[in-house]
Amino acid sequence: QVQLVESGGGLVQAGGSLTLSCTASGRTFSNYAMAWSRQAPGEEREIVAAIAWTGGGPVYAGHVKGRFTMTRDYAATTVDLQMNSLKPEDTAVYYCAESRFGYAGLDPGAYDTWGQGTQVTVSS
Image (spheres, rainbow, N blue to C red):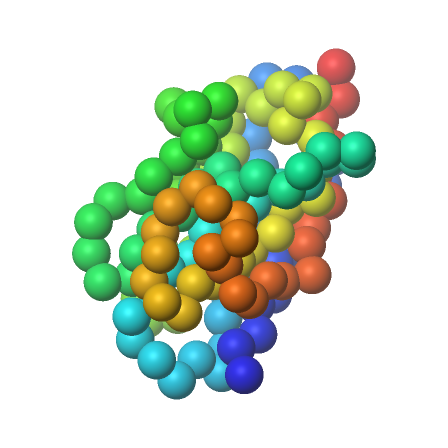
């Protein structure tokens, strides 16, 4: 069973940066994709970035494109999310997610494994 563990959340001032990391374990298949999502209080969960493990670059939600960068480390089976120019509206719980069928898009319903989440708070 795949397990995802996030780290790196915290409190930052607007305009600052944070890097989140997600480490996966227990994976037994190779055609999968990973994503970063977030959920603010009272809001639906949204995917902000996703990447397939087998090739191609990441895809981003429009409102984070140019500010967030998702990268992967094949050897360590980790994915990071570098977040720059943070805004108060970026405040949310951020989750790592995996799609075992390789879907690397922005539909949260297509992901079948989720981490526990890490809180990101951006103060104004």
